Amino acid sequence: MTLDRTDIKILGLLQEHGGLSNLELADRVGLSPTPCTRRVKRLESEGIIKSRVTLLDQSRLGLTLTAHIGVTMDRHTPERFEAFEAAISAYPEVIECCVVTGQSADYLIKVVVVDMAHYEQFLLGRLTRIAGVTGVHSSFELRKVVSRTALPLPQSAGTTNSGSR
Image (cartoon, rainbow, N blue to C red; front, side):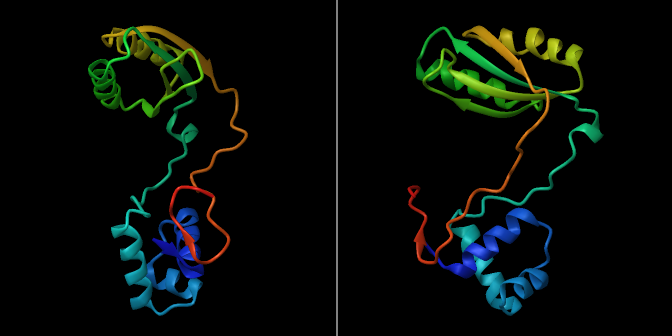
């Protein structure tokens, strides 16, 4: 799919201000509402826009501890990984989970909890009880330096979404 300048503007605005009405969005990108709606629907149907969410303030919700955990598995089989991924996906404290390479861990997960007692319950009561987990290494955030949800967008028109830049 080729993105033009207007598509890129729409994507940028929606990443920063997901609650914009179509009327406001159309006004900011210089379109009338109907063509703007068509473009947004096309970007959604093409899978460029996956979903729209509301970001919450973690600390105001009392979620004061963020842990980054490296998880090591006993076997590297599709079945073992599928079972782990199904189990970890069910835990609301886990906000990210990635299979990684180049480290001693097989997975890196990001967990958000109320405090260290909740983290201990998560670690000992859930994570280490998943079949195949043989090791965990936890690091805790002291403070966030950069925290974004917006992806960097191409700066020129006619850019394709091929995954390379």
